[in-house]
Amino acid sequence: MGKPLALEGGVKAVKQLGPYPSSIHVDELLELIDLWELPAATRKTLTTALRKSARAIRGPHLFRYYNPRPSKVDAAEKAFGAFIGSPHCLAVNSCTSALIAAMRAVGVGMGDEVIVPAYTFFATAAAVGACNAIPVIADVDDTLTLDPKDVARLITPRTKAITVVHMLGFPAQMAELKALADKHKIALIEDVAQAAGGTYRGKKLGSLGTIGCFSFDYYKVLNSGEGGFITTPDEWLYTRAQSWHDCAACWRPNRYASERGKGELFCGENYRMSELQGAVALAQIRKADKIIAGYRAAFKRIRDALVLPAGVKLQRLADPDGAVGSNLVIFMPDVEQTKWACKAMQAEGVPAGGIYDNNIKNWHIYSHWDHIMEQKSVAPDGLPWSGVKPANRPAYKKDMCPQALNYLGRSIVIRTHTHYTAADCRAIANGINKVLAKK
Ligand SMILES: Cc1ncc(COP(=O)(O)O)c(C=O)c1O
Image (cartoon, rainbow, N blue to C red; front, top):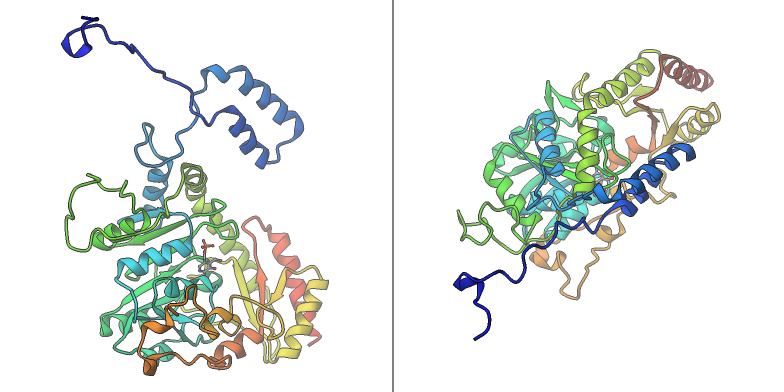
């Protein structure tokens, strides 16, 4: 006969399981604390306190979805969307991911062309190739961002999107580029990797185009070590970007339901942000206004104290008040003087650097993108290059964007810091002026 089953009203064999502590616990938290390089005494105090209360500690749930606790990634998305002024915001694990998801969301695929600037980190162009589309390289002008005239020249019936990059925190010429994108009914994707917090005519960069892509990698103005965000005013594009960013569909209200609209479901990837990145990003976003204000104050202080001799110019700003302020660019009259002034400024202790030297490999300049110049492929199928008719195959040349090579070869970049004091800025400006006076 045996005992009655629980189904028949019998006693349950298993009364309770858990709750157990999370498998990630005090040891992992101590490793995290180690990253912060605390003073030895503080570390010891924390270690003792944490070990002592270990039994009471539950440990984290580091997956954003199905999280019994309020998700840090959710909170970071809300905070970043509000900061940028964008109704829809999606966290991802990098800006490269953000760019690919954004391009997939607007429908970029094999045979399409996407215009990218000659001056940007290679990831902007690589993202186009990763979508099996062709990166079409447009020249930049004295704003060091896309030259709208060159973009207009390069638009073809195959152009699906323009990816505009706000390099070094400087806003691109959005009015002209948006007019072009609207005229040709193509997407305008903003790569805001280097310009979170920058503005154009009073609006935050990343809120002006079809979709915005941000980097939160360590070297950016706001960062969580690695990470990124997508912003868009378009709910459908947001849905499609979510679909690409998590093929497991954890983001869906009803994970296994059929499509709510044609084009909602397809084979995507996994670009999910973890709660670890989300927590750091959230804290950064809460401080964003202060961080940007610090950069802008430093930028203005240094710029206003400069005495530029004839022939030396500041980079033109598409919006005079729009730069993040994390960099300031000076154009020298020629390459030789640029090299000399750069060296002399560095010797003065000024955080100065050149951008372009043909002999120094730099993946921020198109002529050094061997992967694209030589049309390399990951597989024998030859994609993305084989995805277009031979007549439409691009002919890349190392000297195809002469303005970019000219301006970048004559650029000196002065890096600023959000924590610069008025005295720091004065000293830097004095150092620059001292060198330029000897020019
Ligand atoms: C202009 C630009 N776009 C895209 C990226 C890629 O960002 P991530 O490192 O987050 O993938 C970078 C990073 O340096 C960048 O500077």
